[in-house]
Length: 136
Image 1 (cartoon, rainbow, N blue to C red):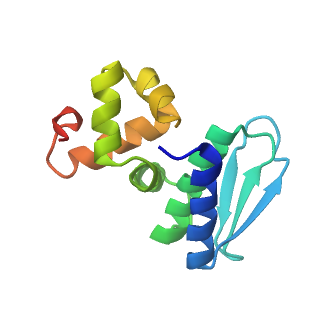
Image 2: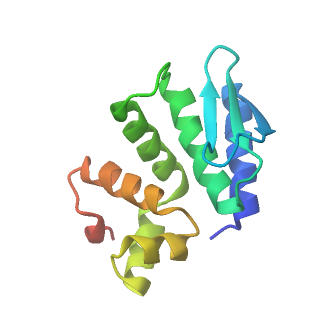
């Protein structure tokens, strides 16, 4: 699996391919990031760890790619699913689950992502009609 830095670089390239700008700013203690549709810009909190930045950037890319103009529970869920599909392959998930079992936190550590991405990946995979553990 690629390093967090390499994965971030891939996401920055994806942003460039979509014409999305990325900025780093101090967004305070709780806000991790946001997609600003009017300027086609993703703003990431400069306080994030590498793993948090990876998850947040992929999530905000989901909002950009899906054309979201507001935050609703459904839009947030779709953005997390998009992020998870960008960062976790079925083979990586299956191998990680074989190594550490199905517990969300253990999988997140094993795959160097956040637990929210594991949850998003499971929803994304279930929509395809397969339980996550059945990935070959």
